[in-house]
Length: 186
Image (tube, rainbow, N blue to C red; front, side):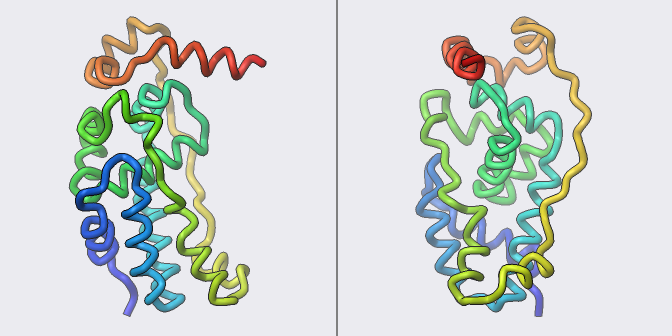
Protein backbone atom coordinates (compact mmCIF):
# COMPACT_ATOMS: atom_id res chain seq x y z
CA UNK A 1 0.00 0.00 0.00
CA UNK A 2 1.43 3.37 -1.03
CA UNK A 3 2.16 6.10 1.49
CA UNK A 4 -0.76 8.54 1.59
CA UNK A 5 -0.67 12.31 1.80
CA UNK A 6 -2.08 12.09 5.35
CA UNK A 7 0.73 9.72 6.36
CA UNK A 8 3.30 12.07 4.81
CA UNK A 9 1.97 15.01 6.85
CA UNK A 10 1.72 12.87 9.98
CA UNK A 11 5.46 12.13 9.69
CA UNK A 12 6.28 15.80 9.12
CA UNK A 13 4.03 16.96 11.98
CA UNK A 14 5.11 14.33 14.51
CA UNK A 15 8.84 14.88 13.96
CA UNK A 16 8.70 18.68 14.11
CA UNK A 17 7.50 19.20 17.67
CA UNK A 18 9.89 21.24 19.77
CA UNK A 19 12.28 21.92 16.89
CA UNK A 20 13.41 25.48 16.25
CA UNK A 21 14.41 27.21 13.03
CA UNK A 22 17.25 24.74 12.43
CA UNK A 23 15.42 21.57 11.47
CA UNK A 24 18.38 19.17 11.97
CA UNK A 25 16.75 17.14 14.79
CA UNK A 26 13.55 16.83 12.81
CA UNK A 27 15.35 15.67 9.67
CA UNK A 28 17.26 13.08 11.72
CA UNK A 29 13.92 11.75 13.03
CA UNK A 30 12.45 11.69 9.51
CA UNK A 31 15.49 9.82 8.23
CA UNK A 32 15.16 7.18 10.99
CA UNK A 33 11.53 6.65 9.99
CA UNK A 34 12.27 6.54 6.26
CA UNK A 35 15.07 4.00 6.70
CA UNK A 36 12.33 1.48 7.53
CA UNK A 37 10.37 2.24 4.37
CA UNK A 38 10.20 0.18 1.21
CA UNK A 39 11.75 1.66 -1.93
CA UNK A 40 8.28 2.41 -3.27
CA UNK A 41 7.29 4.28 -0.10
CA UNK A 42 10.57 6.24 -0.18
CA UNK A 43 9.73 7.31 -3.73
CA UNK A 44 6.18 8.19 -2.71
CA UNK A 45 7.44 10.27 0.24
CA UNK A 46 9.55 12.28 -2.24
CA UNK A 47 6.56 12.70 -4.55
CA UNK A 48 4.51 14.12 -1.66
CA UNK A 49 7.39 16.48 -0.87
CA UNK A 50 7.49 17.59 -4.51
CA UNK A 51 3.73 18.17 -4.55
CA UNK A 52 3.93 20.42 -1.52
CA UNK A 53 6.93 22.29 -2.92
CA UNK A 54 5.03 22.85 -6.17
CA UNK A 55 1.99 24.14 -4.27
CA UNK A 56 4.23 26.73 -2.66
CA UNK A 57 5.66 27.84 -6.00
CA UNK A 58 3.88 31.17 -5.74
CA UNK A 59 4.84 34.80 -5.90
CA UNK A 60 3.99 35.37 -2.21
CA UNK A 61 6.49 32.65 -1.26
CA UNK A 62 9.08 34.36 -3.46
CA UNK A 63 8.42 37.68 -1.74
CA UNK A 64 8.65 36.12 1.72
CA UNK A 65 11.90 34.33 0.89
CA UNK A 66 13.40 37.53 -0.52
CA UNK A 67 12.37 39.70 2.42
CA UNK A 68 13.46 37.12 5.01
CA UNK A 69 16.85 36.33 3.43
CA UNK A 70 17.39 39.81 1.91
CA UNK A 71 18.18 38.17 -1.44
CA UNK A 72 16.79 35.37 -3.55
CA UNK A 73 18.09 32.52 -5.70
CA UNK A 74 16.31 29.49 -7.13
CA UNK A 75 18.02 27.23 -4.58
CA UNK A 76 17.12 29.51 -1.70
CA UNK A 77 13.49 29.63 -2.79
CA UNK A 78 13.37 25.83 -3.00
CA UNK A 79 14.93 25.51 0.45
CA UNK A 80 12.57 28.11 1.93
CA UNK A 81 9.51 26.26 0.65
CA UNK A 82 10.81 22.94 2.01
CA UNK A 83 11.65 24.65 5.31
CA UNK A 84 8.04 25.87 5.64
CA UNK A 85 6.81 22.34 4.83
CA UNK A 86 8.91 21.02 7.72
CA UNK A 87 6.87 23.21 10.08
CA UNK A 88 3.91 20.94 9.44
CA UNK A 89 0.70 20.82 7.53
CA UNK A 90 -1.11 23.49 9.55
CA UNK A 91 1.71 26.05 9.20
CA UNK A 92 2.19 25.18 5.53
CA UNK A 93 -1.50 25.54 4.67
CA UNK A 94 -1.68 28.80 6.62
CA UNK A 95 1.26 30.17 4.62
CA UNK A 96 -0.43 29.17 1.37
CA UNK A 97 -3.50 31.16 2.40
CA UNK A 98 -1.60 34.10 3.90
CA UNK A 99 2.16 34.33 3.55
CA UNK A 100 2.34 36.74 6.50
CA UNK A 101 1.94 33.72 8.78
CA UNK A 102 5.62 32.83 8.20
CA UNK A 103 6.56 35.61 10.63
CA UNK A 104 5.46 33.21 13.39
CA UNK A 105 8.04 30.64 12.24
CA UNK A 106 11.25 32.69 12.50
CA UNK A 107 12.46 36.02 13.85
CA UNK A 108 14.79 38.45 12.13
CA UNK A 109 17.65 37.50 14.45
CA UNK A 110 17.16 33.76 13.70
CA UNK A 111 17.31 34.00 9.90
CA UNK A 112 20.94 32.89 9.67
CA UNK A 113 20.10 29.80 11.75
CA UNK A 114 17.38 28.57 9.38
CA UNK A 115 18.34 25.18 8.02
CA UNK A 116 16.82 22.24 6.19
CA UNK A 117 19.63 20.02 7.47
CA UNK A 118 19.68 17.95 4.29
CA UNK A 119 15.93 17.24 4.20
CA UNK A 120 15.88 17.17 0.40
CA UNK A 121 18.71 14.63 0.30
CA UNK A 122 17.27 12.07 2.74
CA UNK A 123 15.39 9.75 0.35
CA UNK A 124 18.10 9.62 -2.34
CA UNK A 125 20.76 8.99 0.32
CA UNK A 126 18.78 6.07 1.77
CA UNK A 127 18.21 4.75 -1.74
CA UNK A 128 21.94 4.88 -2.51
CA UNK A 129 22.84 3.39 0.89
CA UNK A 130 20.80 0.36 -0.13
CA UNK A 131 22.89 0.01 -3.27
CA UNK A 132 19.96 0.49 -5.61
CA UNK A 133 20.57 2.07 -9.03
CA UNK A 134 19.95 5.84 -9.15
CA UNK A 135 18.24 5.50 -12.52
CA UNK A 136 15.49 3.43 -10.89
CA UNK A 137 15.00 6.17 -8.28
CA UNK A 138 14.77 8.79 -11.01
CA UNK A 139 12.27 6.69 -12.96
CA UNK A 140 10.10 6.24 -9.87
CA UNK A 141 10.36 9.81 -8.56
CA UNK A 142 11.06 11.96 -11.59
CA UNK A 143 12.37 15.47 -11.25
CA UNK A 144 10.89 18.56 -9.68
CA UNK A 145 9.54 20.42 -12.69
CA UNK A 146 7.89 23.75 -12.11
CA UNK A 147 6.39 26.41 -14.26
CA UNK A 148 7.56 30.00 -14.01
CA UNK A 149 5.48 32.07 -11.64
CA UNK A 150 4.15 35.45 -12.76
CA UNK A 151 5.82 38.12 -10.66
CA UNK A 152 4.95 41.67 -9.76
CA UNK A 153 7.95 42.87 -7.76
CA UNK A 154 7.57 46.19 -5.97
CA UNK A 155 9.66 48.91 -7.59
CA UNK A 156 10.87 50.50 -4.37
CA UNK A 157 11.38 49.99 -0.67
CA UNK A 158 8.31 52.13 -0.01
CA UNK A 159 6.21 49.95 -2.28
CA UNK A 160 7.48 46.82 -0.47
CA UNK A 161 6.49 48.41 2.82
CA UNK A 162 3.06 49.33 1.46
CA UNK A 163 2.27 45.98 -0.20
CA UNK A 164 3.83 43.65 2.37
CA UNK A 165 3.69 45.52 5.69
CA UNK A 166 3.87 42.46 7.96
CA UNK A 167 6.86 40.88 6.20
CA UNK A 168 8.52 44.27 5.83
CA UNK A 169 8.19 45.12 9.52
CA UNK A 170 9.41 41.70 10.62
CA UNK A 171 12.36 41.18 8.26
CA UNK A 172 13.35 44.17 6.12
CA UNK A 173 17.08 44.54 6.64
CA UNK A 174 18.76 47.27 4.50
CA UNK A 175 22.34 46.55 5.68
CA UNK A 176 21.93 42.86 4.82
CA UNK A 177 20.37 43.66 1.42
CA UNK A 178 23.22 46.04 0.61
CA UNK A 179 25.83 43.49 1.73
CA UNK A 180 24.37 40.81 -0.57
CA UNK A 181 24.16 43.24 -3.48
CA UNK A 182 27.77 44.34 -2.95
CA UNK A 183 28.83 40.69 -2.89
CA UNK A 184 26.86 39.92 -6.05
CA UNK A 185 28.58 42.73 -7.97
CA UNK A 186 32.08 41.47 -7.20
